[in-house]
Image (cartoon, rainbow, N blue to C red):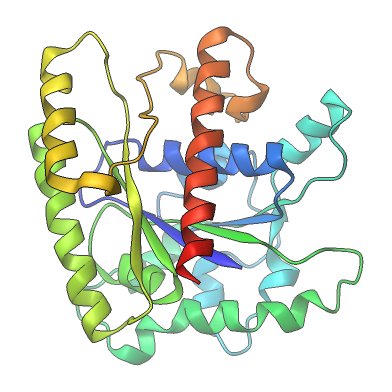
Amino acid sequence: MQVVSISSLKGGVGKTSVTLGLASAALAAGIPTLVIDLDPHADATTGLSVAPGAQQDIGQLLRNPRRADLAAQVVPSGWVAQAAIRGGEGPRILDVAVGSAYAGIYDRPDLGRRDLRRLSTVLAGLGRQERTISSKPPYQLVLIDCPPSLNGLTRIAWTASNRVLLVAEPGLFSVAGTERTLRAIDLFRNEFAPGLSAAGIVANRVRQSSAEHSYRLNEMSTMFGSLLLNPTIAEQSNWQQIQGAARAIHHWPGESAKTAASGFDELLQKVLDGGQRQR
């Protein structure tokens, strides 16, 4: 099981949109996937067409990690039903550990090692819990949507992860923030998570006609080398409409959505291939 945190130090770069795009690609590929919505705003939960109900949210699970039964508390994404309606795709698994503002109590800069391992402890019990659900295959991929900061929740996610996927826009402040995040990953790995590595950098909301974006993409290529993943994700005018409808990009009509979906297919494969090489 690969555990990948999707992170950015700068808000507004489309981190959750990338999380949703990768989740859509995993659903289309038939990869059993769990999305953990660790951002207290819980936008990924909404975008995945999940309405909070009686289940425990991720904040509650973190509160008592040794007693947490994650497999019993996850909720299927509404995208699974949408895929079934389309037909011909076979059984699919895309589950969600529901986000909530309650998780924000852990978004502090002063967490100790025990607190940093809360999500690791929750995930450690997952294999045992899944074996009690015999008809359900184990997850192959866990995507963690992190808050746009380096406070406690992001560090909790990194402690539980194999890899960190960074999201950046081709702009000055975002590129500088990405460089700082890479340094933070190195420091965090040395102190807390020796198995952690960068999965790559996704350039998001790219405008092909923008001279500034072209300049920044060249700069990112020089600065980050092979960590800068291709393809880049183009700015899409109907992203808000797609997410407002709580639909998967792979299920949205139109050529621009089809192109974006294909890009996420490629990015997902590179993330998965990189994790396998790391092993």
